Image 1 (cartoon, rainbow, N blue to C red):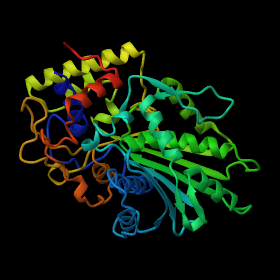
Image 2 (image 1 turned 180 degrees about the horizontal axis):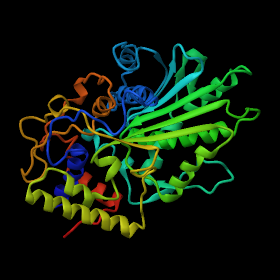
Image 3 (image 1 turned 90 degrees about the vertical axis):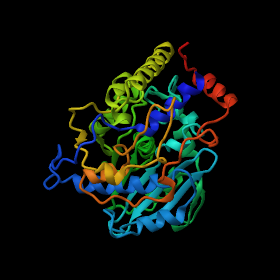
Image 4 (image 1 turned 135 degrees about the vertical axis):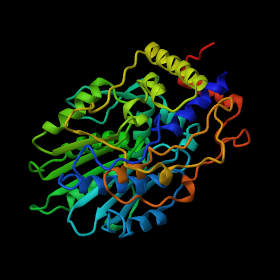
Length: 410
């Protein structure tokens, strides 16, 4: 029973975004791709986020540089890597890139969650408890976020790497931006984008908040000298109401310009259902009758655990709000499906799926851009009992259930 329900977690993360029917791509979008001035910027940001997400499972700085130099992508080879923070044990990775032609323009990028590493990285997915997000202004009460998300952000902001272009050794992300800010001339303005896809999108919200706090603490910075834009592409809602209120209020800052967007495609699981509304998700996935019942039972157990923990998560922007852009999914499933062998069996041999809606390339296509090429890491692995990276032994499963505090059905 325990293996069955733990495997459902893998199933959910791998099936994110599947729909009841695989229909032909639509030719229209909820935004006008030709006239909306923000679209080109959004395509560029999701492309950067997609480049970052290519390297969830490994330290591959040279490959990241090669993709950034690719002039055929929406990024047009205009960005260069200046800081690459990576922690192998936690598979945590973040990047800072600099625009080559627009002065003082940078982007912070973070990775999302690899379905094949759900168990290896399960600490970052812990949702049955909350933690103070201490990286806010000292005059503010610390808002609440999921404990696992807090752990991930803490790892990212404490990660150190060299930044040779600025002459920095073992520098944190903030060390880099502090140096950049110190080097600004009196008339210079600094633009900082923060972008990510999936869990990387959620990270972008938190890192945007973190950097806003840090920039706000600098002395002698004129109003509107620093401009920040946060792009969250399909990030799951791992924030309590207090964090939502704090983040949304940043746009009212008259000292540092702060703008943010949440992009989602219709029925994509992470931004719409995870983790608060898994019952709703169970109605959207293309499941057999038996599997749908199993997923619903899991969702009930999951929700019961959230209720017992007294946790309720809210999305940063709800559907219908100006800062949330809902896209028609224009990605062709024949192009973007990932096939995990001929048959991928998660629970009792009940299901065989192709996952395509939640890919970063799906979002790029839906915005009218060119997908970042797939690499070998993104070819799904067959889930087998021999693949212990996917299916751990019983002792590890017991530890996950205990650490997560998951209330399992009898």
